[in-house]
Amino acid sequence: MPRTGPACLTCREKCRKCDRARPNCQRCISKGLVCGGYPEQFRFCGIASRGKWKGARIPVSTQRPRNAADRANMEQGVHQQQTTNAAPTPPEEAYPPPRSDKLNADTQEISNEIAEILRLPETETLLTHYDEFICPHQISEIGNESDNPYRLYILPLARKQIGLLYAVLGFSASHLGQLTGNQTMHEATAVEYRMKAIRALSEEIRRSQASTLLEDEQDAVLAIIQILLLHDIAESGISTHGIHITGAMSVCKRLLISEGLSGHRRRAVFFLGNLAWLDVIRAFAGPERLCFSQDIRELVACASENTFEMVNGCPREVFLIIGGILEKSKEHTLGWLTWDEYQIAMLVAKHKLYSWDSNEKIYPSTDPRWLAVAEIFRFACILRILRLLDDSRPAKSPEIQDCVARILDATATISSDCPLIELLILPLFMAGADALAPHSQYYILSRLKEIERRSEIRNPVPRDILEKVWAARAAQATDEDRNISWTSFTHCPGITRQHDYLII
Image (cartoon, rainbow, N blue to C red):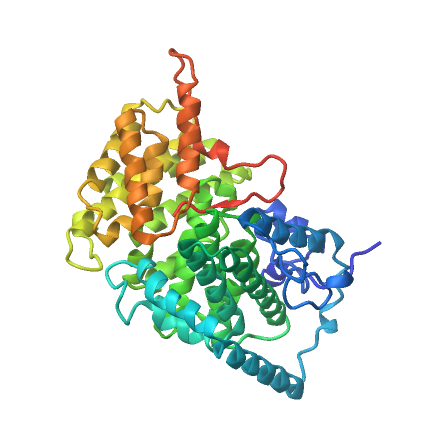
């Protein structure tokens, strides 16, 4: 029986025949592309759409989730229920653009809801905590300044876009609840706001299938995704099933690219640049998880300002090199590149990084420690390329140990009172995964603890994985030098879509 319904977004963009397979187009999968999905595909883990909870605006269980694991299980369960029980998607014509009178009524209702939430004393407390405590730690150099983009962009936008307001309140409640030991705020209030944010995000993405979102709405979607990911990082360091970047960005990047990423969209460029870096970070654990294309990364690198390095640490040129090589690795995994082609691409990228001169680059400020940050990320990326070339290579290999030493020596020049230290979680982790000497391992854990004390945000993933790697190496026979790959601890064989490990 022929398939019915519209073609997926990816096939429509490329003007080709779609097989309309559910949940993902098999033509896209066979070509290694991210299927853009169908009109009702973007139902993020949130409120159930059928059964006795249908239409509920917040979790209405008589038992609140007790901890972060319960929250993750709740979101995962709803997501799986929607995936397995979703009804067949009707044609696009079933979603006509809303009438203007209904749109105006909905807009007024949302405006009233925002105003009501902003009047709550709890809201003021949480927004103040986000502004004064969380924002300064999200970006170096200008952390506590008024032109901090997390203040300049997110807070004003959150007062107009309810989904972003929910996301900010959820993240702030989680963080403040942990700091003060307020279990209700951390485990109940934060979860309720987070679930509302996910539901609002789902509705915005679905609405984008019928009409083009306004500029504020597009930017709010990007901001919601980033705040949800930061919430994941602060809670567990893991974003379950990778739904945030993969699902939403397949829509949002299409909207932004169709208009171009120019200087007047500084807010969108800022959010998209941070998400592109987070996409690279998750691909460190498995290149097949890469979502953004190299074209997108190049657009981001060209349109971004120094805030990219201030937030993410990695120089944009290094970001492009490692992003490109992760894409080549993904293509090789999918069978698009032969081993010889793949190896040549790897060796060329490695040569580019070794010859990249950090002394000739422009940095966000004249602080000489930015040069050390650039070197740290350069050798962390070289280390990743060496492992992509041969993951079984013994850790005692001179080239690998040279990279470890370069990273640790450069890190030693950045003191614990310097805000740049907060940018170095990923490079320290990469060095730790191949650090053999006990004193090197101790030093790495000490620096990670310093970062945790500075930011008051503990991402447990780096330490947990490193301790598993070190324990596995210690259990090896004396004459055995087989490498223990850290990526083996980020793969769950029982699930189709792997979790995102956000080592940042």
